[in-house]
Length: 224
Image 1 (cartoon, rainbow, N blue to C red):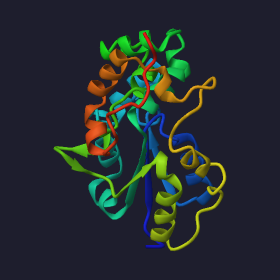
Image 2 (cartoon, rainbow, N blue to C red):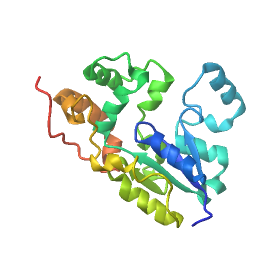
Image 3 (cartoon, helix red, strand yellow):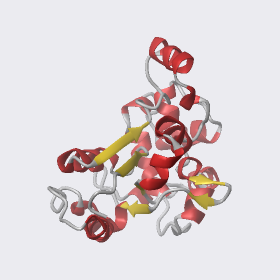
């Protein structure tokens, strides 16, 4: 497997920035994400891409990559992406700069539930991950890296490569020691939720809960 090309599908708010840097450090990965694949960016740039590149004629990241590099190269590459507990990910999405108009998590959840986005950038960062790596109920990539078990999953990826990965042990495995629970202003992600907002996020990301086997129950709700 040492000579096999690796593809990282960079889906947002799942440790993707750190994983992208890991890919660059190891120099054997191709990285495909939202902006470079035309999901968001300047209108002029997107219009140009849509006119020149037929791989943009789909809403799925994995399908855009197939259209761009060709089916043979796709099949001959080892593909992976990262995922995250949707409850924790929703809090992370809210904290992203593209959603800075929403001061409260409750208003953010309501807007997300109604699919109201201020920009293509915001829309991309809130995507349902399953929509981009599943097709007709089938997983289209070779490896799913969970943020909650990232040390173990990257060790498996390293084993597949047949050599150690450079510079991941410290920065990336810190997340797994917290079991995927971000501490934001002294709160774990569950403390941002009410029963109503939890139900909205569960409905929005139902496919991700099911496909990646995340627990749908939150241990704590805000009183309310």
